[in-house]
Length: 436
Image (cartoon, rainbow, N blue to C red):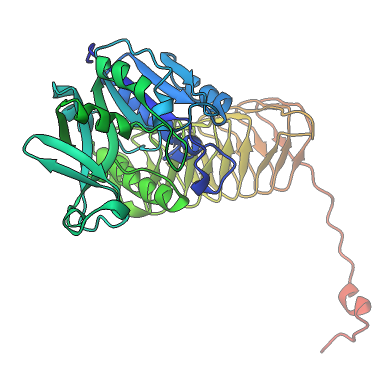
């Protein structure tokens, strides 16, 4: 933690190129809003993080306050002071150095920001070295540092050969900002106040501006749905590599999706096509092909293939098979092999849930709970109408619709209509003669 660094994150823009009613910084990468990732990296470096908001500010603030409790939010006056320069006019940084980040750079890490932190220069400006810098303003650099930024349309042929471009991240000594921010003008085509103009003003006064080359992967901005997908792929590769290094086995890892809040313990196996989301915790467990786990806990258990654990499910020593869906249920030592729905339930050890079993937990108004004890055998195609408690050592016959709210230990329970056979009905119905 650097107690001489404040970080300002610009998150006020609309992001019109995203083609979405949602604020750009709230679009998600691996289960969290883009802005979350920038804030999380920043909090590893400082306890003074200032987020500049404007567009959909209430939604942005609410979303981030649900994740962090130590962030300062400043509302930009975009009507009177639009632009990146206008964004920093209202800030009051706590420390001597101010690092300005963009909220649409979710791939930034604390390690990649270390160059800004370690420098003692009055201004540090990030730059990319691009093979093809077409469309970008060029950064003119010599042995004395950054000399100027030239827009492509204004560049000479010599300047067009430059491959260094502005990456959009800066650090300033706080007194530099205090001096030059009031001097910014919006006398330009967009009528906006630009933070890059601080560079020009400082250079005119002979202040040294240090260039810091950064890699495009970590400082990649997200301005469109295409950029969003690209950033997601990079983040997913990082997450998968992290957990494989910790001992998780992944088959065809590029087909697997894991959100940032997921945790693994022990030796786990993830087959192809698996999706693990939310605050799931997987302990010594096996998730089979094309299964989904959401906000659930698996301990020494397996699910799938094509199983689905919906939020608040908790499995211990349990087997969940093909096309079984579990929601908000606790299963301890249970087998549910295939084609069942177990919702709002508790199921004890040694119990077996047959194919086609459903806990009918919703009556259209309220959800109700099903409690199944130990060593209970629930036959195929059974519907258990909640609320219902089944004690230990019970057998429920296949095809039963269980409407009792309490079943005592040791019994067999069944509800079936008596079979009726009508001779030759097929032939009468279709007016056919019976073949010999």
